[in-house]
Image (cartoon, rainbow, N blue to C red; front, side, top):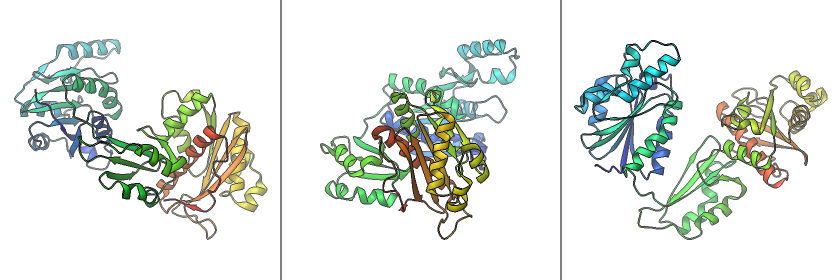
Length: 424
């Protein structure tokens, strides 16, 4: 049995190359493979063409774990299984377990068991099937030409639902390496230069470590790793790093900020509602992405126009006239009105100039105002972001969630000192 220590990912699909679909599967798998101690050497994206899939397979080294996503469906352009069968000299053979599963599925749904379903029960000879809990195309796992091959559907929900079975299959065969010891901190409200400066002294004191940081949906992550598996992290490094970064650290694992906030709310038996303007529903969407959100999320008001802020949330027309929609005063009244109307323990509000137009000298593009209302009081903070509309909306959601996280934990004004801060 070949024991790979490196992984190659091959994403198959015309839609990934013409801009219709973004490949989110590869990033997910890289994180999952890291849990197995497997490092990704390359990510290849190829069209639904047998010769291109074949070329990608030929380009992988012997001993590698090769994971292909996409091209396992019922249509004529789904060629991955057939191409792997040809490349590996393993002709397609009906898998009885998959065929029985698909027949039963068709019977339950009063759907004929036709050629398109029969096709998905054909696997390269000798490959094992992992039944898809959300769809019809199974995962396929096996060995060929010194590689370990994993074929997965390209639909992200199906691929992720199948991953626990793939992970178990890899573990059962000892297909894992040794993870390099590392420390990860996920932060909000940091810019990349700001995070680099905050970690400067630690990096100078530990030049032998590999330091890296990268932008995320929520802010910036930082990681320190040893250079090889024989080395250990300096004792107490994680605590010293956390102390340097302070309350901007929301997780030391791969959970997203919205996951952390949901867990904190549920643990505290608290609820939240939201009032949004420039983010257009992104805050509510972030709070309802995970299963179990109904235990803590009540609902939201999408109040884009000024008069709707008054009608739906009770924002004073005078406040809007004197201070404007993008102001601390409006953010406070939005949050207070939202909490009153929804009856939650907490309410968050967001109003801002997302851009690229609409800015003024006093309120340039990237100006956002956040509000938070709770039993402890009503708070508001103003931040300056950058010129990019989507990133401004994304960071507005992050800053609002992080304010709630800190307020749930400590019950203090989460915007103290926020006035005039510049974040990118």
